[in-house]
Length: 278
Image 1 (cartoon, one colour):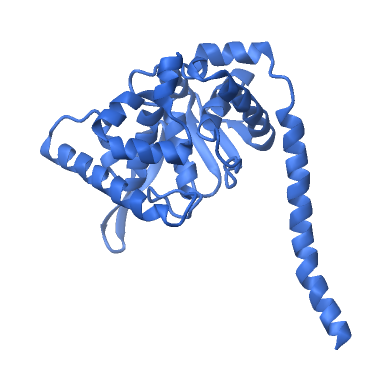
Image 2 (cartoon, helix red, strand yellow):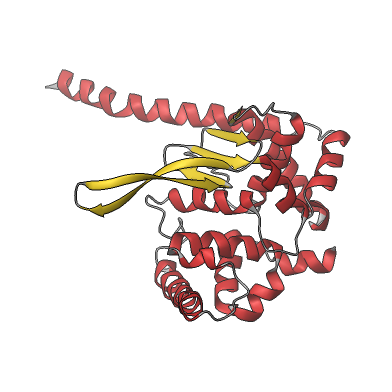
């Protein structure tokens, strides 16, 4: 009997200890990476390629530098379509992905393993269903994709153009990595992991209300400041709203103030202050 209890304790505690040890080692590595100096050449790349970078308060930039070091160590980059990867490409993408993580628990996109980068928009085959059991393949050209399986796919030319321009409210990296945050809760449905269970009710009410408002505007042909692609689904609405939250915060707050406040709580940032800082 005693032996059985002993074996049971081993079966229970050894896996727990292994998980704890693995996490402790990971955090030790991450602390070391965070403390690395951030090269001046890297700063120059971000100042040139990422318009939002120069608007961040100094404390946020310092935190961002540490997150970038970790991201570059833990995530695999892969060139596709003939693209030769460079430090500039990796750094420009990593910086924007990590901007969504400032002031938040450092999960660092726990499901994400790789970032695939094409030189230009890429074609994907999607099924078009006519009836049960009957479908055909259609070709769509895309700027980016976020996969549940642990990958983000991006078109470098649009990464660069959208990161250099804050006026258009479009940023393909913010968009696809918002999907990654959304997918951490399971299906991409516009409801990422929130800090409190009670917060989901308010989040769902506000997001659904403003999503339906955009859908009505698109259906009626009425103008909207927000990209109509956000009317495709609540998941796309969250991703598009994230783009505007960081690039055109004053405009988003003026049109959807409750949504802006929800995003401010979720991202633990207030980009309107960055505009003043800049």
